[in-house]
Length: 142
Image 1 (cartoon, helix red, strand yellow):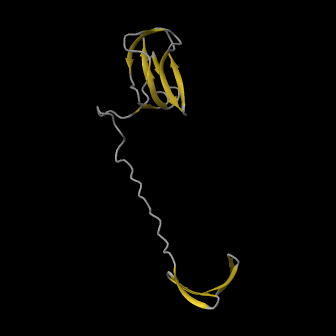
Image 2 (image 1 turned 180 degrees about the vertical axis):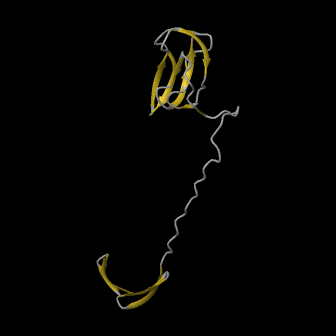
Image 3 (image 1 turned 135 degrees about the vertical axis):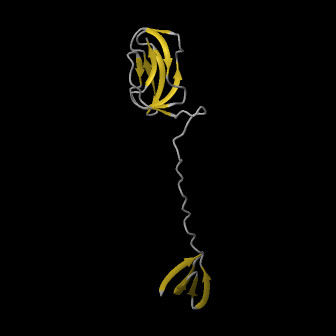
């Protein structure tokens, strides 16, 4: 049994809560008994998290995440994991040492990846939107 005093619009009310069973409370206000129906508590909704059955692939069936390849002499490699935002060269282009060949987004920043030597682009191993790991061969320059 709990007793409370409330003052509403200048009027004093003595409220006694006698008994509460499930969602019904027996209450007295200034000596007058009332049965008060309480709002039922809703149970929280628990959502199941579903995980993909397999790693995502491109339309061609290739894995979205490129795996590091063995560097073959003139490969420009990814210095850190990220997503390819732009490819600034094409196969057959001549590049100079220090020229930007790929833009890689990592840690919410765009990073310019530069050619490490003068030469001709013979292969581009990634596409825009690909996720790559550190050490992945991005562009091969010979």
